[in-house]
Image (cartoon, rainbow, N blue to C red):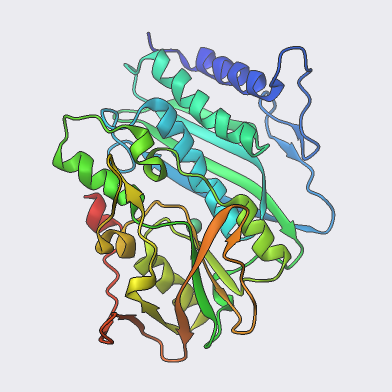
Amino acid sequence: MPLPEKALIAQIRRLAESARQGQAGKSVRPTPAVLAGIGDDCAVLRLPAGNDSLITTDFTLEGTHFRRNWHPPEVVGHRSLVRGLSDIAAMGGEPLAAFLSLALPRNLPQAWVERFMRGLLRLAEKFSVTLAGGDTSESPSGILADIIVVGTAPKDKAVLRSGAHPGDRIFVSGELGGSAAALVEMRSRPRSKLDPRDYPRHFYPEPRVELGRILREKRLATAMIDLSDGLSTDLAHICEESRVGAEIESTLIPRARVGKPRREVDPDLARHGGEDYELLFTAPPGKRIPAKIAGVPLTPIGQITRRRKIFLCSAEGTRSELAQHGWEHFRR
Ligand SMILES: [Mg+2]
């Protein structure tokens, strides 16, 4: 049974409050940053003194970012929020509150919304993020979820895309291409269901919030971005904003291992596939970067150059310009 709007909001509020409650018996108390949340005309946030606020907004659209027959509702809820949390991570920030606007088709089963909210709120709870407001509406076709995440970083300390200098080394966290590999698999066999455990980076990506915060605190990163569009495209964003170029060693790009039995993804997926939500950052030449931070492996893959082009170097020593195939190429 679909829900009329008023009942839907009440239900979302109830789910949000019970998620906040955690174990039974604990009273619902807003986190210090959120003085008023769902139920008022506006949310009231009080950010810690001496902090800048970080605000990011992301659409999740049925047919573009997910398909109902490929992605369980919990996965859609989780992934919608990950996009915002990952943007906060990319600035070295701390997420505080999220706002969710949902447009739902009239015939959408109530159970879908409940399961979507469960996936979203489970992740929110894990990162102590309060769902502090939003809106609902009927959609003429397809599900739309728009998420805003608000976070903080100490004044003037957020890590921008524009801070890379020639000579800086380029690092990525984790492994790349795992999310795109799941899409390729689902597209080639549309009727079979993938086991989310075989493709964790696609179904339940983990935003690298702790890693981003530590890189900012220890001043290890000069520029940073999260890998949502794919390495080739996101590296180009850093180069553009920093007015520099880059050289990447093809063989150094860490390739995800997916499927059953596990196999390494195609190098092209690691270079261009999006939605891995790993962090790409640059570090000054003299800085020692640990092999792992917050349990996440960090791999040097190249360096920033003065010449404003991006090259891919092969093991044989050949150099070719790295085209930005972009994520759209794989998604369509
Ligand atoms: Mg981003």
